[in-house]
Image (cartoon, rainbow, N blue to C red; front, side):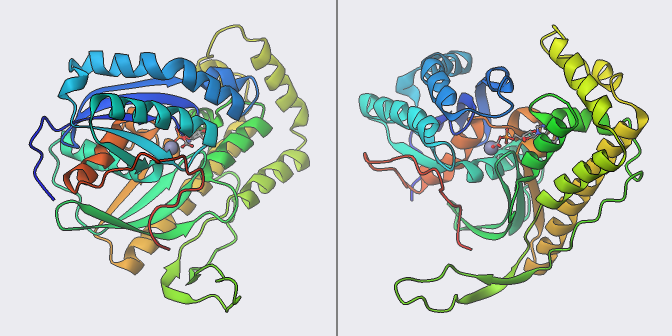
Length: 378
Ligand code: KG4
Ligand code: ZN
C-alpha cells in the first residue's frame, strides 16, 4: 500500500448497460466531471435494452464521451494516475467496449488499469457524495441496498485498513429486480419506458393505501453455498441469514387488479395517446391527465408496497448484522444520492477504484468482461 505520489486523478469508464459514461475523480471524492450519454430514447422504442444496439451505441459514444469528461475536468491524459473501468456485471458486448478502450488508453499512456465491479460502484457513489458534502463519514460496517433495473442486492460492507473494502452479499431478489417490477408495471399500465420515473412521479398523486398489496413474507433463511461438484455434497450452511426479495408476485397482483377492475380499455387509450404524443418527453402533468383516480391510486399503492418492502428488509438485515450505517443506491433509489449519482455513471467507478489504486490492486492485460460478476462473498 502506498500514498498516491501523483495527482490522485482517476478516469472512470462505464458501459455495462445502456449508458456510456466517463468521469474524472480526484482522490475518490471530488468529481471534476461526470459525463453520461444515455441510450434511453433509442431502447424506449423496444420497451427494453436491446444488447446489440447497446454495444453499437457504446462504440459510437465512448471516444467522444471520454474526451468530453477530460475537457470538462480540464485535465490532460498525462495527468491521470490510473484508468478504471467496469468489468461486470452487465451485458457482455457492452462491457467489452469500455474495457477494450480503457485497456488501449492504459497501454498507450503507460498508466495502471483498475477493474471495478459495477455494484461496488453504486455503493461508492453514496460514499463519494457524503465526502463531497463534507458530511460525517458513514459509520462502518454499513449495510448497502443496491436497487436498480437489474439488481436488488443487500451487502454488508466493511473496510479493513485504509484501503481494502470487503463485501458480503446478505440478500438478493429471487426473481425480478425492483426496477424491473417498476418497468413491467409501468408497461402494463400503458406508461412509457423506463417506467420507474413515471411511477414515481404519478405515485405522488394517488392514495398509497387504496390497494393493500401484501408481500408474501420471505423469511430470513440460512444462507446456503452452491452445491459443490463433483461430490454433490449437501450445501454448506454459512453463518447468518439471507434477507431475500421477491417482486414477481406484486407484478401479478397488479395485473389481477387491472383485470378484475376492468381497467384494460383505459390503459389502451393511454398507451395510444402517449404513442401519438409528438413531444419528446411528455410532462408528468400531461401523463397524469391521462390517468383516472383509480389508476393513480393503484400506482401509489404499488410504490408504497415496494418501497416498504425494500425498507423493511434493509432495516431487518442491518439490525441482524449489527450494521452502523445504511446506504441506498441504484436507479430505483433516484435522488438518494442525487439522481446523477444514483443512475449509472462513471464517477462512481472512478471513486470505487480509488482504494484499489492506493492498495495497488491493478488489473492484468487480460482483463475481460464478466457479465455475471458477483460482489463479495455470500
Ligand atoms: O441503476 P440504473 O440506472 O441501471 C441499472 O443498473 O439497472 O437503474 C435503472 C432502473 C430502471 O428500472 C428505472 O425504471 C428505475 O431504475 N428508476 C426508478 C426511478 N428512476 C429510475 N425507479 C423508481 N423511481 C425512480 N424515480
Ligand atoms: Zn447500475
